[in-house]
Image (cartoon, rainbow, N blue to C red; front, side, top):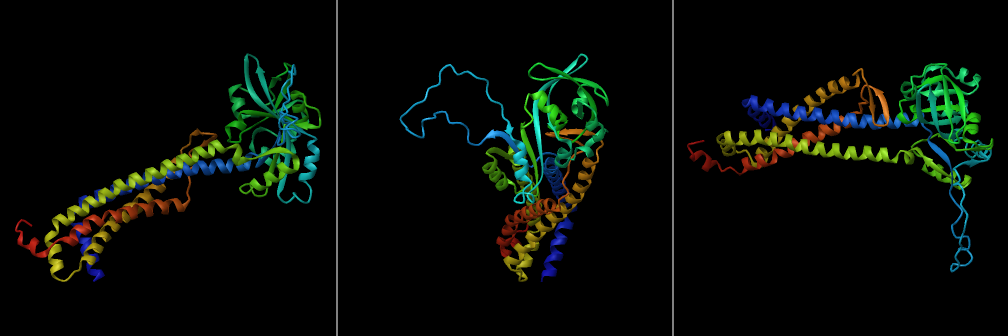
Amino acid sequence: MLTTLFAIAVRHLLGRRRQTLTTIFGVAISTMVLITTNSLTRGLLDSFVETIVNVAPHIIVKGEKTDPMPVNLNASRNSSAVAFVENNIHKQEREEVRNYRQILGVLSSPEYEKEVLAASPYVESQVMAVKGSRNQPLLLKGVLIEREDVISGIHKKLVQGDIASFEKTTNALLVGRTVAKDMNLKLNDQLVIISASGKSRQCKVAGIFFSGVNAVDNSVLVSLKLGQIIEGLPANKVSGIALKVADPFLNASLARDLERITGYRCLTWQEENASILSLFARIGYIVFSLVAFVGVVSGFGVANILVTTVFEKSRDIAIMKSLGFSRLQLVGMFIFEGFMVGLAGALAGGTLAVGAINLFANIPIESSQGPLTKTGFSMSYNPLYFLLIIGITVLISTVAAILPSARAAKLEPVSVLRDSSL
């Protein structure tokens, strides 16, 4: 019986080839667009996470005390007392980590050595860079280059120069490619750095790097000692400590533990990039909505061809019921037709999507995709997304066949056969 129903279903679809092929083509195009769009959005997210995990620190110990000085010093003794401060105008204290070497000692202790793979103290400073008639504000970061290399792999990202020249040259700079392009900098060029205090210092470009992260490529690196001099910090103070941990995706508990131990605010890379990750999440919801709406449109196409089939094959359906086919068998036959149309269109769309994804991924243009700069588009090849969208498309097409099949099951053979117009 199943073989007979299958043969009849195939004959129904082949009997209206043009309409069937048009419907399959529509389902295929919608599936291709959905898979390609999802691949682009997920690829961008995956690329961002991978780049951040490989380049940026997993946890940052910032120079922000977790238990700052209370405004009301008498609050703990007498809740009714009020403290007033008069004529006490001072410069706001900058954020800094004091005695950072002690914290590095704690991080290298047996308790944390398996969880914390590397720790790199740094000093950040907003400076003005001047070359000839060109000037540009930028972020200057003083680092211990051997420790920074473990965090970001900076030596692999150098497009000009090398680490050895940076270590040997006094007042050397490693310049991000964006800064180099904006200021037309080349290797061994001289650059004047003006600090917030107004003091200037002539530096030499010892290398140019490209990380793919726009914020990083719009900065310059110097030695930690030079960074402390420019920022006006003593040798025992830094702006923060960058950490690379064993599990960058399960780092929240470690960050909270380090906050308790050090007394300084510890931010994970997820917290630092919360706004961007939230944006990607919203884009994901939009893509999911697009999948639903386009899938429903494809379902209408499948329902249309089956409604037409029921109308044109009413006489055949009446004869089949007269010969003993049950309502359930007829419903199953039309649902199977919807399933075949949806499956054929979804598989064709999946095949087209592979070609579209490869095309976008290999476009030889450099594009700035949000916080990243990439050559070509970042596309995801995760088969789970293919299977998910193909499955949703086939499901919608199958469900769309329920209404026509229910109409076919309700036909009364006697009434249909009496009507001479059918």
